[in-house]
Length: 512
Image (cartoon, rainbow, N blue to C red; front, side, top):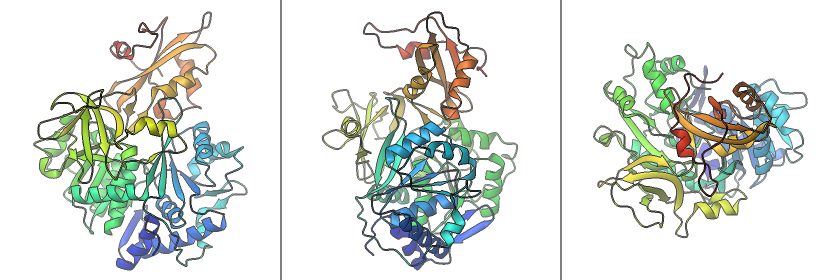
C-alpha cells in the first residue's frame, strides 16, 4: 500500500481482524470489515465530489461513527480532515470553513440551522452532507455513502503529509488552525501504547468530544490501531456513562475535571460495578488532587497527562505505577519526546523553579495553517514548541503545571481565550473597554468574568451584554460574571493589569 497515513488503517485492520468490533454507537456495532467497506464507499463519494490530495473536508457534530468514517475516508484520498467544535456559533463556524478552504462539510441534524447560516456566501464549499434530515438540496449521509464504490482506494500519502487542521482560539481573537501530520498522530499513538499498555481487547469509552485531539488521539486512534473496541457516546451524560461501563465492560476512559467530578458525585457511585475499568485518564487541565484520590480510594487507576493540541496532544504522562506516589503531577516526558522548563532567556530552569514549558519531538505540530507569523512565534530555532504554560520540573523529572503565560483559561475542558471574547464585547455600541479573566468554579474548573467600561453617556446592563454574546459565541465562552465598572486597572504603559482583576472578590451569584 502506498498510503502510509491513517487512510490505510481501515484496510490493514480489516485484513488483520475483520470480525472484531471496531465501534459501538447507540444499539449498533460495526466490525473492522464493515468500517473498511463503509469508509471506502464514502471515500469514493468524496472523490466524486472533487476531493483530491490536500483538499479539506470538515465535520460538524457531536460524537458519531460518521466522524471516524469521514476522517478515514478523507485520509484515503490524501485529504485533510477539519473537525469543528459543534458548540460554536454560526459566524465562528463560517470563519473556520472559509479559512481552511473546506470543499465538503458533513454535519449533524442538531447543527442544521447553524450549518445553513455558516455556509452562505462560501462558494468554495461545494458539497454539504447531512447525517439525518438534510436541508433541501443537500445529501443524506447514509444514502450517499451506500451509493459509493466499495473498491479500495490507494492514494500515495506520506507520513509527513498534513492529516488534520484543528482550530484553537487565538490570543489575537482569531482562531488558529494547528496542523497535525499523519506522523504526529502515529507517534502520539505510540506514546499511548507505551504509557497505557493498550491491548487488542481494549473496550474504550469515547465520552469526550472527538473534535478535541485528546478524545481522538489519546483514546479512539490508539484503540483502533490495536484492534480494540471504541464505544462512542454522542455527548457526556453521567447515567449513560454508568450504563455503558456496565453493559460493555469498559476498560479505558478519558475525561476532564467536570466529567470525573460529576461521575463521582452521582448517587450510583457507591454501588456501581466499575470492576472492568483498568485505566482512567485525564488531561486538558490540572485535576484536583482530592478528586484523583476519590477514584484511587475506590481502587481505580487514575493517570494524568499534559499536552496541547499542537503536541498531538501528549507531551508528558504519569503512568499507572506512579499515579499514587506522584499524584497531582503531570508525569514525565512521553517516550519519544523531550520537555524542558526554561527561563525567559530560554536557559534551563532549576528544579522547582517556575518557567515556560517547551516541547520537542515527532508529535509537535509543523505549524499553523496559512499563518507563518504564528508558526514562527510558537517554534524556536531548535524546533521546540513554546507552550505558553508555566510549570516546574521536580528533581525526578516530573512536570507540575502551575500557571499560564497566556491569559487562556479552561472551562469544562474547553480552552477559552479572553481576547476573542473581548473582541466580540467591543462590537457592542455601548462598550468602551472590556477585559475577561478566568475565575475558579467548582463545577467547570474555571469560568469567565468580564469587566466592562461603558462609553460615556451609555447605559448597559450585564444581562444585555450576555444576551448580545449568546448568538455570537459558543455557550462555554460566555462569561458567567459581568461587572460594569468605571475604569480598568492599567500599567504605566497602558496595559490592563489582569492579575488585579482576578484578585477581586466574586459577587454573591453569577449574572443570569
